[in-house]
Image 1 (tube, rainbow, N blue to C red):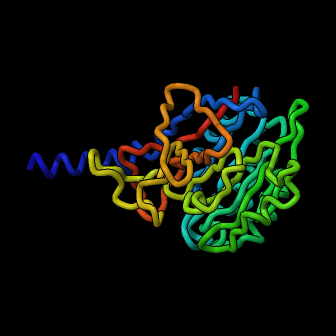
Image 2 (cartoon, rainbow, N blue to C red):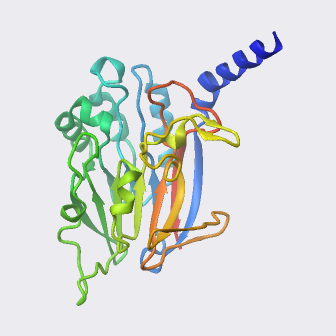
Amino acid sequence: IIFIIFCLLLAGYSYFIEPNRLEVNRYVVQDEQLKGVKIVFASDFHVKPYGQKRLDTIVEKINAENPDLVVSAGDFVCGHTHHSTMPIEQIAKTLGKIKTKFGFYTSLGNHDGWYGKDEITKNLEDNGIKVLSNSNISLNIRGQKLYIAGIEDYDTGKPDIYKALNGVEVDENGRYNKPVIMLSHTPDMFPKMTDEITLVLAGHCHGGQIRIPFLGPIFTASRYGDKYAKGWKQEKEGEMIKIDTSKPIKLQKDISTLFVTRGIGVSILPFRFNCPPEINVIEFQ
């Protein structure tokens, strides 16, 4: 009886409480070229038909950060059909209330692809959210040029990293010489990224969504398992570099850096355990 009660309490917590424990997590990143830039990264919204109040809260939390930029890696809608999600018209109109100094940019996710990429793109862009599909945009932030690039989703599109980087400035050696932030829905594209990209931002895995203590996630939607499921990752020539997130994270040339958000919504199973949803604030110093 005690065991059954414990399981019921655990299921209730994982269904009713943790999915609604929206955290705002902050990170300091050292990069001379991006010094002073503040980015809010919010992804994998998966807005359900009855999710208006929650979506309003997300907008309020993002606006409270007074960001220079807001970026996302997609999956605005929930499920595989129009009946399982809030209409994209309503989602886009609400997210269009987010206030930034230099814009809101996103790639699209697999759920967006199943819903209809053209419809998603039109509604987002009608509300001031720029969709980057194997493309990039250059920004001038306080005299510093920054490129935001985005690739198509791996499952529902044809991601093309080099097409996404087309037109980015290069030096005399042909290397990208301006900061580039790449938006990729899945972190599985990270091993294919050139280390000249300043920072890769991804989602899709939801951090595993249900993480068993000492064992890890029951499922990550990544071919790499838990390797890129959440958090900060750095690699040099295929070797992982340990990162201490209690200190400023250093971006260095010839080292590839990835950050994977746990995301905001849920998918497949309506549960989260040991993996609360999050909005991420990245401040460059």
